[in-house]
Structures are given as structure tokens and as C-alpha cells.
Image 1 (cartoon, helix red, strand yellow):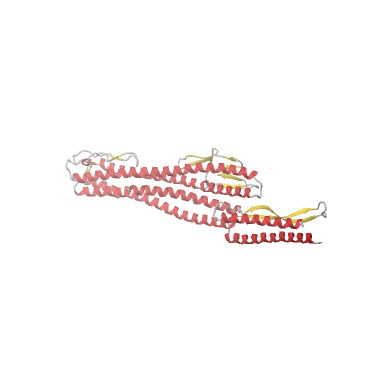
Image 2 (cartoon, helix red, strand yellow; image 1 turned 30 degrees about the vertical axis):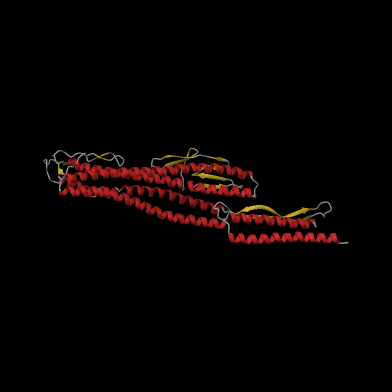
Length: 441
């Protein structure tokens, strides 16, 4: 009789545990770091003892272990695709910031305005107001280069700060993953505590992959080893240090524990690529400023001012950051050819300057710079959309394997509730039989 009571009791306790776990699944249905749990049951068998026949008697059911839904392949695929997407996002963000910096500076428009003021001066080469307008447009043109250069510095600095913050975050995640490995080694396998630690481990691995594109492998207990470019970032209970230094190309060179590594994906790589691209844009902007200065200053050197003196340099500087208006007066603009007498209205040198600016000059170079940058952003936007679709597909596949299905959990609630009630009936039946026996006689 007591065996029947034990069977009913064990069944009721197992059903209650399953109901609790089902409720936990439902409560965490929207958590991206939670993997669905199920209970594995095992039968209870009692050995023969005093007053009991030798052999094994069935004595109910017990909770054997908590099973956590997992898929190593889908986890790795989701991490890989999220790292690719994070890299594309970071690079695209940096390039978009740089494009805004150059476009908002208005370099192309300032060059066109400068050329237009030179064209107006041709109608009256000795006009003081027109000469002053040319000088003012030249000053504004130099200022647009300053604005663009400073804005590129800001974009480069922003990409650097985000990347440095990402490196710090990656090191924190690596240290936390090493501590999680310690916990996994200590906790009893098959328990809820182990499932929680495995959830935490997978969340840390996901975040590390988004930052660094790290690859992970698991041992038989579920402890993670993380590598970057063949170097271990996390191994067992030890986390190594990820660092970065400036590289020759304008980006960053990464190291783990002092050893050089090449990142395959992740936002850190995207930030480095953005820094490198911005550095290339700064070089193009400097080249454009030098082209402008050389073109205008060469024309000035080949002409004569209204007072008959030789033309002086129009601009000074070495690049976009320090280009400046060198002339102090509109009367210094050399519109006439060299050797012309004072007061000459000959615009031969002015025309030569206009031709130099128009024929494959700075305006065309500025247009090519903007067009190349716009094309690069468009191409990377297409790539980003494709990578986004791939990452979403991988995440959906992972969620289908490890996520909580509310319909299934609702069915489990009903099933385990009925099992609990059925075991209650077993206990009640055993009690009724016992009462009947006691009432005999």
C-alpha cells in the first residue's frame, strides 16, 4: 500500500516540477538569451529488503535532469552571421559620417562659386568690387576645406572612440566568460543552474562574436574556448587581453596577449575599416586642396597685377587643414599676362586660370571624390542588406530550434496538469483502499 502511495506521490511531484519548468519557459519566451528547457524523467526502482521479496519493484518516477535545447551548428552560424553584419554596420556608419562631413562643408559648391566670381571679373578686370568678390570667394573656399578637414577628423575620432570602447567591452566579456567557465565546471550537470550558466555562456559568445568575430568551441561540460585569428582570447578559466595600435593604413592593428591577430568580422574590424577609409578620404581632400593651390598659384605667377607687378601666390598652405588666402587685397589678382603695363585690361592670364580650373580641374576632382564616396556607400549598403537578411535567417533558424513555442508550452501545461490530477487520484485510491482494509472486521 505504501508503495502505491509513493508511486502517486512521485508522479505528482514530477508533474509539478514539469509544470514549474513549463511556466518558466513561458515567462522567458521573449528573452533572446533563454533556451527552452524540458525535463527528462526516470523510473524509480526499489530493491528487495526486510519483509520484501528479493528483486526490483517499480516505485514511481523521478526527475532525472533538466534538458536545455541547443544546436551547436546553428549557434555558430548565428554568431558568424551576426559578426559579419556588425562589421558591415560599423564600416557603413563611419563612411556615412564622412560623406556627411564632406557634403555639408560644401567644397564643390565653393569651387563653383569661386570659378563664377572669376568669370564675372572678366567683364571688368579692373573693377574693385569684382576683385573683392573674388578674394572673398577664395577665402570662403579655403574655409570650406577647413570645415571638411575638421569634420573628417571628428568622423575618424568617433570611429576610433567606438572601436576603443568595443575593445574594452570585449575584454570585459572575455573575463566574464572565463568566470562562467569556472561556474560551469563546478555546477552539477543536468540541473537548472547548469542551464542558466549555458544561457549566460551563449549570450557572452554572441556579444563577443558581434564585436570581434570570435570563434568558439565547447568541451564536454560546455566550457567555451574562444579564439581570434588563431590566438586564444579565452581558454578555460583564463582570459587574455585584446588590444589595438594604429596601423600604417590608417586603421588599427589588433593583438591578443601581445600577438598580432587578424579579425575576420565584427564591429571592431568594421570600425578599423571605417578609420582606414576616412584616412584615405583625408588624403584625397589634401590632394584636392594642393591641386587647387597649385593651379591658382601657377596662374598668378604667370600674370601681372593691375599695377604691373608680378602676381603673388593666391593661396598658402600644405593641405586641406591649413589652406589659407595669401592675398591681402583684390588689387593683387593677376588678370593680365606677365609683362603687361600698369592698368592693362588684358584678361589673358585670367582666362588661362579659368581654363585651368574648368578643364579637369579642382571642381571635377571634387565631384569625383564625392561620387566615389557615394558609390562606395551604395555598394556597402547593398552588402549590408544582404548580410542582414542572412543574419536574420540564421537567427530565425536558431530560435526555431532553441526558442519557446507558446503553443507547445500551452499543450504541456494541460498535459502536466492532467498528469498531476491523475497522480492525485492514485494517492486518493490508495488512501481509500487503506481505509477499506482498516474498516474490515
